[in-house]
Picture: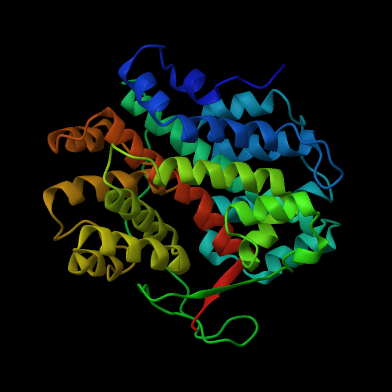
Length: 363
């Protein structure tokens, strides 16, 4: 077997020349680098996490998302029975990232370390699980946009819980509510020192402004994956036309509310507020309590977008043709729908890294 040349188009049954195919071509950077992330993650040859282990974990994660065709794709490469002293804690970690990343603690990483996982291996494992969480949502969303059937889900769609402990693992003051304030973030395993990167690797970090960030130097323990992930991010959020940037940032904030990621929400709510000039609407979203609907009181357009992004962000995703119909009532065209889908789906990836490799702190 070999990796698909465009796995999302294959699994979503997207025909060349269709409106959706044209929209994906317009978003060429996002399309290419989502594919590039897949290719890097499932072709790297290293001692930290073998390819058959990667495929075995990916198949489990896709199945937990009810993405059965994606799970079957990965299972075709993986281990028949992925149980071992090394893989069992990895699968426990993968389940945590998949279903309840907000419940992660440093103990989850310690269990991996005690099972023989290196820092680089832990980062690659986290990237893999978070990426398949993103990829699974893209498959579901693209199938909806392509008028193909999707799995039904009974997952409740509501705001998630978040951290309410007032101190971090190292004793710093921690945020206990969603905010637009600028926050710090500290890793639970050591970021790679800048001096340990080669000159060409430092150049990659510098290209994206990552050299001074503990978060990105931690992810830089697998730099090729980080590079593709960053290019995917930029392709989704920083491209012209289509969905207004404020509404892409809104989708990121909604996903972060579902997953309980205070740090990500602080960054993207602030951007949504600045760009939309509607601070009150963004503050109302941030103030929603666990278990409540995220869209109440919003404009009709934002309600449709919030409901779509929220339903996509729960696990397994619960987005339906009805959510898409509401977007169409608000006159979102195929490119705008694709932008909304990709913006929300990307934060299934981003939140899972932020929540399980470290935590935010108050300056």
